[in-house]
Length: 532
Image (cartoon, rainbow, N blue to C red; front, side, top):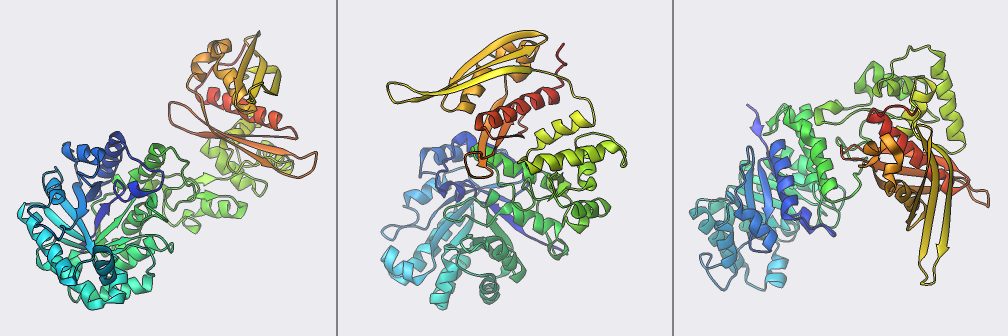
């Protein structure tokens, strides 16, 4: 019979310790709902009483379907009893069903950081555990710096976790707090710990300072622990925590684990994994790491022509799991390294049905290679590629015609740099002028469109929710005749981002080409009618 592995997410507490991260109450509710939908066993929501946001979060009722809400805190202070510790009281009085307290397990920290005797530290751990358990809450103990403590003073580190276990703790979590322990050490130490505390009561909490947090978590499970802690996308202070977006699918999809263990996440729920990963980045207003395993946009991307041919014959050749299993998609990259296999696969993805030997395939492939020779790169410009392909192979309506544009940059008397843009456009044979100002030329062009949206006639309603997300410039060669490549990322209210590209010796012209492609793609994907 398979043994269960319990998933403990600490994004809302460990993740909140990341530099620049400050979750609002609404953020916490969105993330916890996503984690519950995924099916994690425990959601560590923060430290009630430590700040108003955490306190309010724990005062609310959360109708979780799968997860237990867990409150975090520390063992009691030495100058009073557990019953009279106000911090522990705030945890017990919260609506959390589980409480996780951290305590010192490294004798060096007991001596220097706490300044108390080793015996007093053991008493603080055991009395805190008994008081919380007597309140009816599930109790777990985070043995902070356990692995460093074990290496320094094995017997004392074991005494710390035994104090919590003997007092009735459900879980003893072994923490690699500074992230410096390596996988072989994790395995060896846990094998010895299990002689004193059963594996069914042990957890692992790994930090990523040596890029081994996921590996340490997995070898800990193989060594006998049955709870694994981590965060969405590995969010956490310094180098982060174990990335549950990698740990969870490895446990569920890899036979080395799935044949021995089970987790509280089924085949339907695990398909929310990619969505959960992207949600966190959206809340943090940061660009997703496309190279993340399993959930990254490039996790199942294929570029070389021979690779694509192999994937089309048997996806297992270059895909260790089916991207659909984790809510992700396969991406066939089109570049100057691409062959007909890439082109055909990419066309199929965007809904263009064409025979394998159609001469337009070669025409498109040659066009891509010619354009990339002069500086274009369709690796990440999915929207610009689709527009190019549809113009060569299929039909794409003509939308907005730009007859002329003018961009100027001036410095005013106050020393401010002001960019101004003016463009003459035609829609349904009607000419109009759009003008705008901005911090830079592209911002001015964008404002010229945004501030004069009514000039776009029947296209106005389609473009009202268009928003530029990112703008990147790359100088492709040096000298006075340098070629510039501009990439623009756009989005709209539907939440799907797309990327367009422009290349020119003139940075304004390159920006304008990328911007126009963004407008055209927005109108195309929203099924806007052709211009008269």
